[in-house]
Image 1 (cartoon, rainbow, N blue to C red):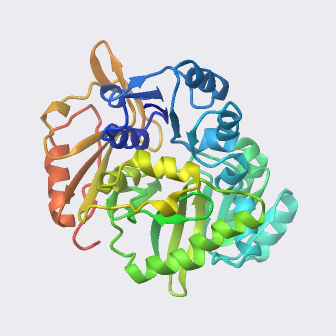
Image 2 (spheres, rainbow, N blue to C red; image 1 turned 45 degrees about the horizontal axis):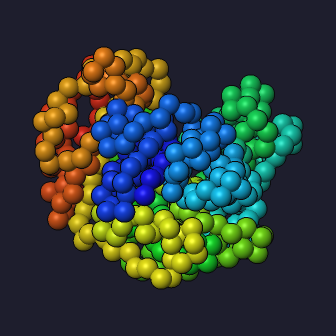
Image 3 (tube, rainbow, N blue to C red; image 1 turned 90 degrees about the vertical axis):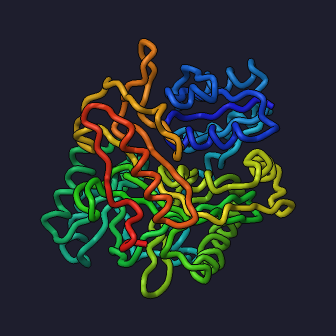
Length: 419
């Protein structure tokens, strides 16, 4: 069969890599792809938001299955458009993807159906939000309602910081229309966890759990990033807790959506805080996470095509998913200056020397026959081992073989003291 993957980052490289292992797949296209993906798939120069062009490409090339990586096209309704054209596509439709496209929609849903989450208030008027901030609880979390490329969240410790964040979102409108509504919620404390599951709108099959490292510097210091590394399974998410997450969060969420007339098909991604009172929802995402996918999919034994087709056809109850009983560790190499300003266009050397890890490309392009940097997060290096220590040693042994100007990576991913 012919498969089209939409996206061009490390997550999409991990998806393409796993799909390439299926005996059912003859040809993979990726739009727009990157230099690493180009080694496994044919890259197509179409932007992820150009739904009409992507649809035309799928029809013209007789694509049997399209897999959507990033959230933007899902929120824009790519699934609805493809389905109208009779095309098979993996991912939630527009109304279902609202769980990521609108934090307010999700918070209302969680509240209405008593799914554990933090207290919150939502505002669409600046003065009302300001008045609330003068008398609210602190520390607090402030979020733009819509998509903001992972940057629409502020943790504020007092009114002064809260007003600054409010001004940025509602007056300076740094997130545009995404800040038309803002959510103010209580800060939750505990360990963060990411739980991914496949769901066909009725059945739910959880994936192996994961944990990512958001801060730029060792010891979880500095500004947040798109992710500096990840490990799977999550060492803090015990089997009992995972069962609790299924029973108190994932199953009720799918049922809640059903009651709202929404059939959710695809990957359901719950961002959780493991609090003293039990797991609570921080956010929901409508797709695979990044860089968690780079540690989750390498542990998958079952053919990903079988899972995706069963999800689309509402037959997840007919299959069993098998996972490797191993640990996966991923370290992300970024451009100097990220997550702030950084330069690109630097040649990456040493990739061919890597033997005990898989290198997932994120911000890379092929230029004059050379692989060069093209983004903030450049590469994700993943290894598997019988223990976190073994996988970690491999990752850091291999990442040292790679080089580009200004390359930086955290050296404390999966440290024994953390796992």
